[in-house]
Amino acid sequence: MTSSAQQPVRRPGVVSFVAVILYVQAALAAISAVSLLIWRSEILDLLDREGSPMSGGVFNGTVVGEAITAVLLFVVASGLMRGSGSIRLFVAIVQFLTMALAIYVLVAHHVGGYVFRAVFSLFVGVFVLWSLYGNDESDRFFDAHENKEPRSTTSTIWGPADPMSD
Image (cartoon, helix red, strand yellow):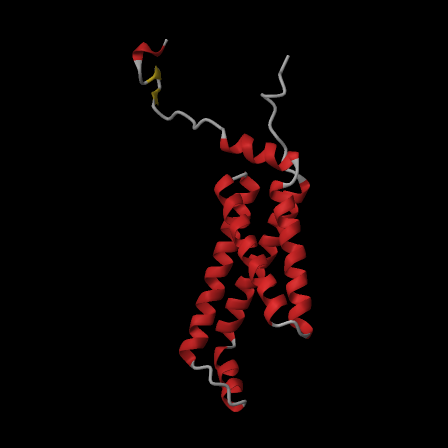
């Protein structure tokens, strides 16, 4: 008979949802970086015709920034899918900062699109924080993955490396 402690803890649907959204964002950032590289000269010509102060160096920085963003989003999404508590904390910190910025925007720039973007950011932040910290299933999932004992690799083909371990 197996106890419930021996059964694996399933990943909650809300955690999977957040991670899938992050995977989609990572894919879009990667597509953006590749698109900017493919059409680099056309985009720079257009910016020059329009009188944009954006230089080639700034454009290259944008491409690099998109590529780094894609990699980071992929790592964070993978960490959430694996149940990493440190990634969970990282996402929470980023959401708190985003929500603080949204509150600042609501107070300082309370016009038009800024308000809608700030309110949307607050709703997204509350949902993400709730999905990672606000329900028992998420707590059990992340706790179960943080408390796993590391696999022992100190053994030989004859048995454990410590002959006194019997």
